[in-house]
Image 1: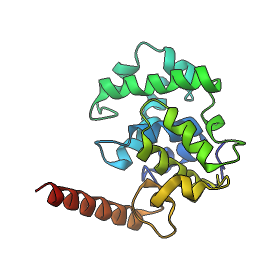
Image 2 (image 1 turned 135 degrees about the vertical axis):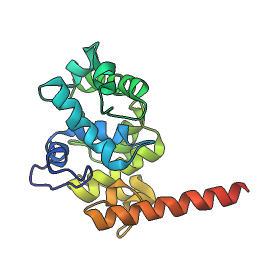
Image 3 (image 1 turned 180 degrees about the horizontal axis):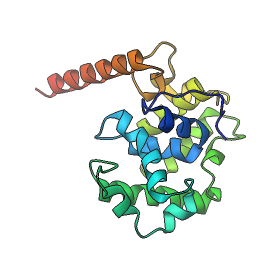
Image 4 (image 1 turned 180 degrees about the vertical axis):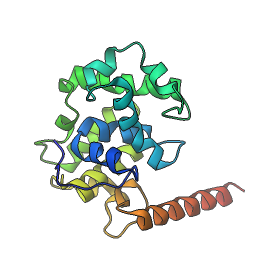
Length: 194
C-alpha cells in the first residue's frame, strides 16, 4: 500500500493525484503510460481509466476486459497511442496477476534491497532500465519506500536535489525544472548526432 498521507502532484489534478497516492496499481500504470505524452496526462490516465471502468482499478479486471482498448480510445483518448498502450496496460496487469497475485505493491513491499526492487520492476512489461530506475527514485523520494541501496538502484534519478524525472516533481515549479532538464538533454543528444 502507498502511504495515504502522501501528497503527489504528478497529474497536477487533485483527484488523479489522490488516486496515485492511494493506489499502487494506479501509480504503476501512470509510470507505464509516461511516454510520448506530457507527464501530467500520463499520470492522469489511471484516474480516467477508473472513471470509465466505473469501479476501483483491479489488475485482474483490467487484464480480462475485452473493452480496454475502447476505453483508452474514447475521447479524450487516455494516451496518444490508445490501442498499443491499452495492450501494454493489459500485459502489465496480466503479469501482476501471474507473478504478484494482482498486487502491484508486492513488487516493493517487504523487499530488503533497492537492487531487488529494480530487478522486479525491470521484469515488468513496458519497464526498461530507465523507467524502472525512475520508479525506484519515485518510491524513495516521494513515498518513503527506501530499502537498502535504493539510491544506488535509482542511479542519478535518486540524487538529492535532482530535477531530471517524475521522481522530482512535487509542484508546478519542479515540473517546469524537470521539463527544462529534459529539453536540454534532448538538445544535447541532437547536437551529438550532428
